[in-house]
Image 1 (tube, one colour):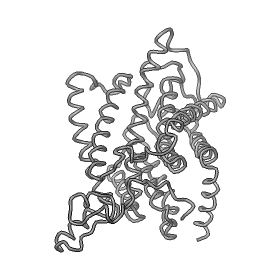
Image 2 (cartoon, helix red, strand yellow; image 1 turned 120 degrees about the vertical axis):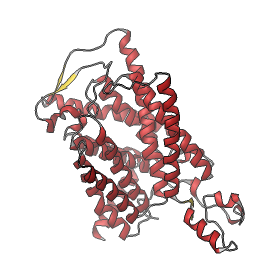
Image 3 (cartoon, helix red, strand yellow; image 1 turned 180 degrees about the horizontal axis):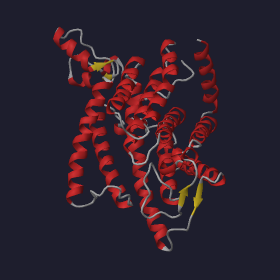
Length: 396
């Protein structure tokens, strides 16, 4: 067993031979090997195109999920827009709009995930996608504390360095609690949606069905799209995270490490996470790289804790602290109804400029501290294994 092995999802392990009778729909749907020896050759070719050793092939699973997600999002979005629950105004970053916009994605994600899980015969349903790990509630709460603490540390360093200035308190009385609760609900959905898509469904699915060459192909498509488009905010941040993952993933592939699939998937999901942020207002290359890098930190948390609950809590609390509590720009957006007021000052390299604290070069150090804290407090043994594994890869 490789010391870097990620937690194995029991839902995708091959079942006993007697539980998988040949030539039945049930046997084809099980996430284990399918016996096709007695089928005509046309059937065998078709089955092998769609089914692998762990059931439905990852590529078809992702395609089905994306199509279903788009259908559900379109239907729910139509209803929400019809009842004016979501505004068409650009640049309007209010808690109600943010909540219902994320609710569209959340409902679409759960619907698509439930159907794909049913197709894949996962007994744990959507929880099988990196949500079945132990002590989920504890990891969620500690993740939330870690996210707010890490963001506060970044704000504190920026303030001490003169790159961020505090203004007047923007709210008073019951508005403090009202907007605090509204933004908490909105960012809890943000955490569920973004982590649900990237660290839950995609990370779990790609882990069981990707190799280095497929990962490299996806990364090349992402970078090629940005190059072809020729515009976007902070696209060099995507190129940087893609380049940083190339050599480690290639070395894991050459060593045939058992954990290779997990880290190839982490390379893809982290790069893709940075890619989707290039459409935000006011982003710079550091902010895009930071989004991708913290996406990788969340992948490390999945590997260390056995689930994505820590990542969900950390993500939600970070965004809540940045947007509501400190009133800073979040990926270029300043919220309506924030508690404190902060403004950047000085060089955008250090202050983050219009991007907000996430656009400051100092955020890279904060993310490194988060990764170190994850390894130290959640998997002390695995932190040693990680160091040994890295040294073996470098030596090999």
